[in-house]
Length: 112
Image (cartoon, rainbow, N blue to C red; front, side, top):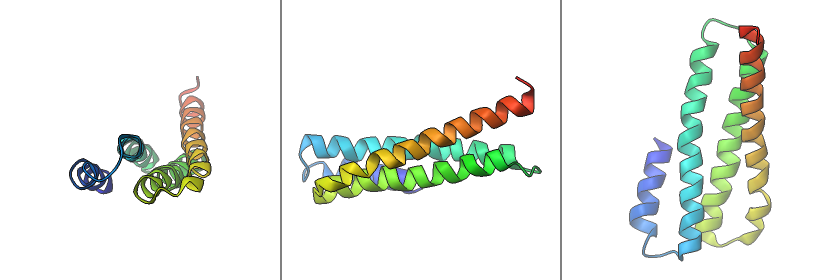
């Protein structure tokens, strides 16, 4: 819901107010939020009925990554506070950690 609302806000309210580069940053944050919302749902489905530390780590990393990556890009885009650009990669690393945790957990559970 937040990703869809953010996308609509960017496309309608911000399009005429932000320079192209800032709007592109806002859009990147929105796309990553939407993609990782689906990944988080997959983790939730896989975790049903299990007590998997790896899935817990993946879900937590995805959540933190979504908040930090998207949040920093959105705030950076709207406010122009350039120092937030230094925080964005932390969110990206959390997203990568989530994918690694999901891949390792899936590989171990399938015997790959």
